[in-house]
Image (cartoon, rainbow, N blue to C red; front, side, top):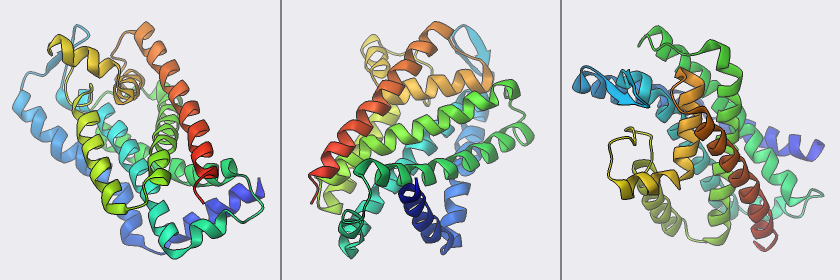
Length: 253
């Protein structure tokens, strides 16, 4: 446990020494919600239909903002491995008396704490500024979904960060992956009226699973049986990501 706390403490110090970076991390989800959400909400007008229920775009997009923030935070944390590798800290950490799993857990716990703060601020803004009827009784489940989401994506992206040794190659790969996964999902639009091929592709996408779970937890929209299956699928995705991230890290030296 002390080893995990050491990694957590080190990442906390790095983030807190740059208050601009710290503020940017917390503010990005709010900017997504206020800029994209409000703009599309005005454009859509009467709202959109999802699962047979009409909702405003702000309500629909709230879960997408939370899922997007988790994915973006995971990218930033995974990219940190390149900075650590260039400075030699990465290899120094691997010589410390800690397991590879403890090293990864220390990294992800810090980012999970940051993401919880992000999520709470975003939910407050959604309720106060946009009057989104967030389900307060499901708030604990929303927080759990955010934590599981950031952990799952961090472990998955870490696999590629360990395998790819050039940061320009990693940036190219991540940008393409980000574009494909974001738009082939239920993040920006409901899947009820999209082409069949896109609908099936989206349901194979972990971003869709995470977004649908968050949408159900925040505004209660979605089929509970599908949401349960997507929750199980994402948890399996998380454990698979952790397993392969640890295996890849063992071969990183």
